[in-house]
Structure formats: structure tokens, C-alpha cells
Amino acid sequence: MKSVTRNVRDAVQKDFCRTFDSLCGRFSRWEIWSDFVGMSAIAISNTVDHTNAKVREEAYKKIASKYKSAELERFAEMLAAVVTGMDNNPDQDFLGELYMSLELGNDHAGQFFTPYDVCRCMAEITNTDLRARIERDGWVSVNDPACGAGALLVAFANDCRRQGINYQTSVLFTAQDIDYTVGLMCYLQLSLLGCPGYITIANTLTHPQTCLDRRGLIPRPGENIWYTPFYFRDVWQYRRLAAQMKLLFSLPEKQDTQVTSKLKTQDEQAAQSPLPLKETKAGQLALF
Image (cartoon, rainbow, N blue to C red; front, side, top):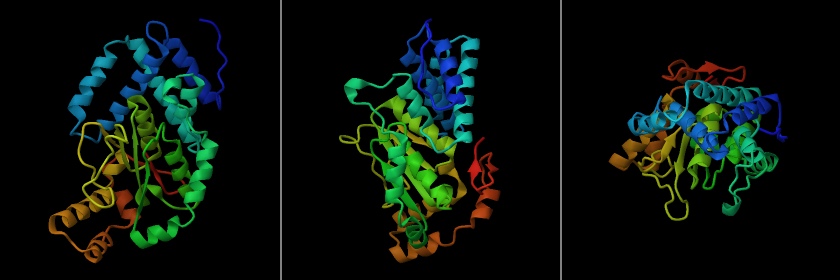
């Protein structure tokens, strides 16, 4: 295989590309990437989403059966590189940049991801009154109906962090994309950053994601909804319970506010979280 120059950010992305290129041969580069993203997303999803676990596990086994043991180990190395890269620098579109660097974008579909610096600028512009809104409403939600690899939502989460806002307990992230692989790239990045929420794989124009409650906590069920691990944190479970109670009993808005105000403090939530989490120096929680 001839040497190819990649425009990558750092040594971690360079190692990822080296491992990725070593897998290309029996299968196309696109198939390798799609299988890597799919298996990685399923591995994370099946730890928390038991409703869709059986179907997704079968999909995982079908993909894995194509590869030899040594090749599957390289997939694990690639996922480890993603975790390391985002852990070293969470303020980047790790997978999106690699996707474009490896020339995997669909030109015919207009698949050109917005540069991360532009996304960061957009996030800073929209986050001007975020703290006041959280103090007023308890939490806020952010949605990207054409999320791509999730760069805009990643930038939003990082801007929250710079403002001293714990997005893991104060922001619900929701997204949608028509492209299965690209949507799962968004799912992977939001999951690794500890963003609570869900990603829907569907055409936003013809099949937009709708919710049962007013604030988007309870999406209408479907097999193409991918819930991040932090969506199942206790603080969000309490909020969903309050939303379900309101749906059942049609509670007025004032009563709903009283119910949600009884949620436990952030320290109690972290201490009693059912997920295998560790606390960072900034006080937020991480999966790895």
C-alpha cells in the first residue's frame, strides 16, 4: 500500500489512521469505518439500553463475524485511540475531523462537516444567558436536527464547561441525522463526553423526532433512537419520572416545578449513580 499523507491534529489521530489503514484490503475503507463506528456504538448502547440490546447485539455479531481475531483487536485499538484523544482534548471534533481527513465524506450528499472552530463560535454566541435559564428552569435542552458527527453539540458542551456549568446534570442533548454511520459518530462522541441525551437516525424533514412531553425528556419510542449512558443517570431518571407523572395526571406547570425542585443535589447524584463513573478534577464524571 502506498504511503498517504493525512492532515491530522495530533499523534493520537495519526496512530488511529495508521491502524485504520492497516485494516483496509479485504474490505473498502468505508466499510471498515462504518463497521468500526457501528460496533463501538453498539458496545456502549447495550450497557444501558436493554430494550434494543438484543437486536443490536445480533447486528454486532454479524459485523464481527466478517473479521479475524487480530483484526478485531485493531478495532479495539481504534476505539482506545478515540477515548484517549477525546480525554486529552475534549474540545475537538475528533471523529468528524478524521472522517474528512480519510476522505470518507459523501460529496453527492453534500457531506462537508462544519469546521470545529466555527461550531465553537456558534456555541459561544448562543450560550450568553445559559446560566440564568438553568437557574430559572432547572435545566435546558439543546438540539441539532442535522448533527453530523456532533461537532456543534460537542462545542456547546465545552462552552458550558468553560462557563462552569455542569452540562451532565443541566443540559439535555438531542440530535438527529439521516446518515446511520454519521449519526452514530455523534452518539459516540456525546457518550464519551458524558452528555445526557439521545440521537435519532432518521430524515429530519420527513420523520422528525417528536416527544411525549413538552421538554423533550421522553422521545416517542423507536429502534433508531440511541440513548447515551448519561441519559440514564439518576438525576435524569427523576426528571423523566416527574414528566411521566405530569403526563399521567396533567399537573399544572407550577406543580411540575415543585416536583423537579426536590431532586437530589449533584454530590448525592454522583455518589449514587448506577454507572461505573469516575470524577474529574473539574467535578464532572467520565466513563473512562
